[in-house]
Image (cartoon, rainbow, N blue to C red; front, side, top):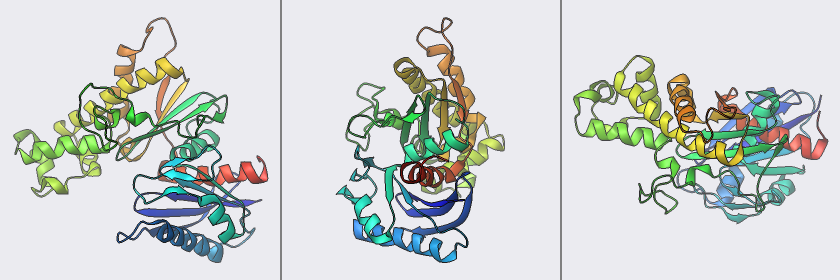
Length: 324
């Protein structure tokens, strides 16, 4: 059975795996991206270190192609990382450089596209042809599947749902605009609200303050989710608020795209039904034509943090080796 390598590049780490035609990860490797520099040469060396380790450790059929999922804008021909907000990549010809270095064909795509492809092939979206994926992490990313094919847009930049403006004159976003969706429904939004309550010494946030040892800056998304699972009312309310905003955005996407399924991934999705149920309730209340049209289902992603590297590996397989 043929194998390919999948690489998932985040702002602080590079994860990789050898993946077979069934989507199984046979070998793993990971490197942190050095904080001192996230310039192209440094990240490229980090990618190569991961690939070299995988090749050295993997026994069996040698991987025939490499797929890379990058957090950023990828050109329509999937050869260039046009812009990566957390890395110093600007019009970086990543595909050609990595192909030359690895001696293998390379495919480059946006990390959310890779994650959706993995969920379509092996996870929550399997058997569905019209799917929107929303990834809730620091911000909001996304991808779109139409008739079983990834829809990347004319310039390869589709899926930036987090920068839909949902509040006129709202909170300033890192992109430079105000009122973007990700300022209200994301990991940053969740943590921002919780930290403000702890900083104000709100009695409602006493449990969160205890978990953060009194330091608002030490409070993280996983801490809030854990508190919510343990029954803390404030943590549950904060997640429900993020979920409500998630449902508002989904209602807009449903009106525009009419998919059959929404798959929610990313780190915040670890909250599960504490996040998804409020989103479903808001969608049911706000969907255009409600009562006279089917309501798309909202489900959690199944493959977790592995989705990006599995999808990147499988995209390389499909492009260079043909579908299984």
